Amino acid sequence: MTTANPTTTANPTTTANPTTTTTEPPTTTASTDPDSSTTEDPDTDSTGGCPPGTLDCPCDIGSVCEGKLLCEAGVCVAEPRCARPEGEPNDDEASAVMLPGTTCGDDALEAAGGFDGAETDWFVYRATDALVCFSEPSVEVTAAVDVGTCVFVSCLSGSPMVFCQGGSDAADSPDGLPGCCDEGGVDLSFNCTFGSPTADLFVQLTAVEEACTPYEFTYSY
Image (cartoon, rainbow, N blue to C red; front, side):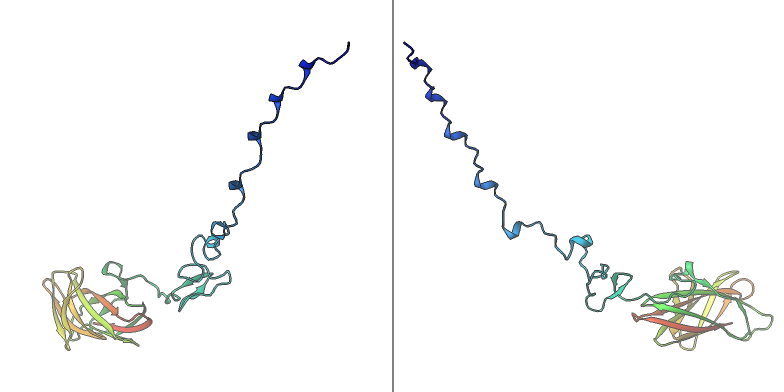
């Protein structure tokens, strides 16, 4: 007979195992939580972490500088710098601006400068003795603010002996030179322990107000 052999019946053990399903677990679904968003913060990311409109940060991307800050060249700054006269910075004796020298009895010479806020400016001039000399060194300052004025003496020969005039007060410079200080101007006299009274006179001008302030001064021997 041609009856089919029952041993060829499909083995039930080949039925698909339900544990092999490929359904994705729900934990792989993309999150819609707004807190996990990767959207860039417009206040910082595009400016390298520098918030637009704040000090030293950009102001050319539609932002406005905060408070009294000003936008200059695309950056918020506190205020424009003061005009810097020739010779700046001259904030100590070592960097004092050299002025033309003068001789005892000559007419007063003029000079000018400017303060960049509360600061000190230094100048120096050679004061040369004359055969007959009856005048004394003097510095007079003209400015819109009070200017502390000092003159210190460095003799070319010997040590200086300084005598303050007109109510000015005796003082020493940061480098130890003797001199006199007053407000707006100084008058003094001096001698040197050796030779004639010829010296380099260091002029120290100091402003205490945070403002751009030009000034002029005369100096003489």
